[in-house]
Image (cartoon, rainbow, N blue to C red; front, side):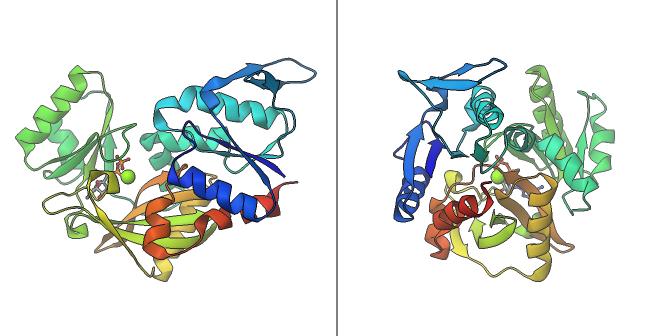
Length: 291
Ligand code: ADP
Ligand code: MG
C-alpha cells in the first residue's frame, strides 16, 4: 500500500516509528505536511496538490494533526475522505475530540464515569458554579488546552474566582471540574487500536505537580489495567468513533474517571514504558480495515 502520514515533522519519534513498521511490512511510506497541501474541490475528481504533484495514488492515511493546525489539517483529512482514501481516524472524530466539552457531553451520554464538570456562559455567580462540583478545590481547564497547559488547580474559592475572571476577561471558555485528589497527581494513558487495548501506562506528575503530563515533567511506567478500566477505555473510543486513540483516565475511589481521549496519541512514552510495538499495531489495523 501507499500509506501517507500527515505530519508537519518527519523526525518525530511517532512518525519515524510508523515509517519503520510500515516499511517492515512492505508498504511505501511517505510523510506529507498537511499545511503544504492545496485542496482541489470539484464534482468529478476532487484531489490534493502537494509540491508539484497530485496525491492520487494514496491508499491510506495516518493523520498526526497537531492541535494548532486542526482546522486546515482536518480539511486535508476530509479531502482524502472525499477521495475514498482510508484514514486511521476521520476528520469529524479528530475535530470532536479536540473540544473537551463536546467530548464530555458524548462520553456522559455513553454512560462513562468522569469528574463532575460544569460549563457556563461566563457566569459571575462563581459560588453557584463551584457548588455544582462540591466547592473548592476545583480544576479549571480551557476547552482546547493540551499538554497540561490551560489546566489550573484552584485550591480556594477566591483562587477559583480570580482564575475564572481572568479566563472570562480573555473570552477564553473553560470548564470547572471536581478535583480528584486521590489520583495523587497520576493518571492512566490507555492506547486503543482497532477498538482494543494494546498498551497502558501510569503517568505520575513530578513532585508537587497535580498534572501528570509527560510534557510537564511527568514519568511513566507500565500498568496492568483491571476489567473496568479496559471496558471504559474501549467504550470511550467507541463513543468518540476513534478506533486509534489514547484514552486518559484518573483512578478514583469510585472507579476510573475519564479525562480525555486523544486522537493523535504520542507513541514514544507508551512504547518506552510498555515495551510494546504500538506502531506495528496501527499498521496492521490499517491492513485489516482498508476496503
Ligand atoms: P490536557 O489536555 O492539557 O492534557 P487534561 O484534562 O488531560 O488536559 O489535564 C492534564 C492533567 O491534569 C491530567 O493528566 C491529570 O493528571 C490532571 N487533572 C486533570 N483534571 C483533573 C481532575 N479533575 N482532578 C485531578 N487531576 C486532574
Ligand atoms: Mg491530558
